[in-house]
Image (cartoon, rainbow, N blue to C red; front, side, top):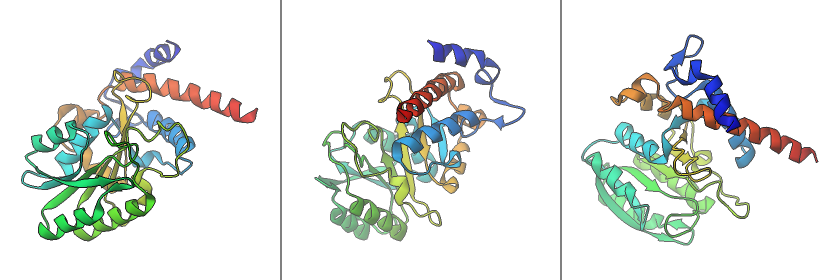
Length: 258
């Protein structure tokens, strides 16, 4: 409730498309992206820049926008078998075709993927994967496979949409970091997509994409009106989350002091 109150107090920003100082919030509210970066940096134990973040209305919308911008009708998307069932709908809604490859205990069967790539030269434009705590199999992709998947993406010119909604839901610490950290900034191919829907509650519907700037910038230029004007989808909801993250950061700092 305290967090909501602070969001309401910032209503000049949260109930508008942008501000004189920052312009339209195309990638998200600047303060939210900064605090989100600080939060994720603590969690990932890796550097996180606000410039590599874009706020979304949950991970599903992040995936949908990725399909809109980085693929087109007639392209092929490859998914793990099995995988998150709504991914099928999002991909087919964009006029794309689906192909599947098996999943192994250390992640997607990349030998099967490479076979499909060679059989369909230039046609596979996206690989959708749930690389951490896979839904529904539960597996986590090894770092070796993450490196090889990025290498295949660069060689065959496709995008990797990594659905990482469960990255921060480990009972024990895991060594695997978001797929973003395996990407090449000189030839970026990875969109790491996550959400607060699993961390706080399904009704929150605030998420983010972590990717290099070259991939994020075109994602603000789609015809969806709310993206073209503010991107933030719900600035008020985002500022509610902002206050919660700031409170969490303060508690975390005090905890580590003791």
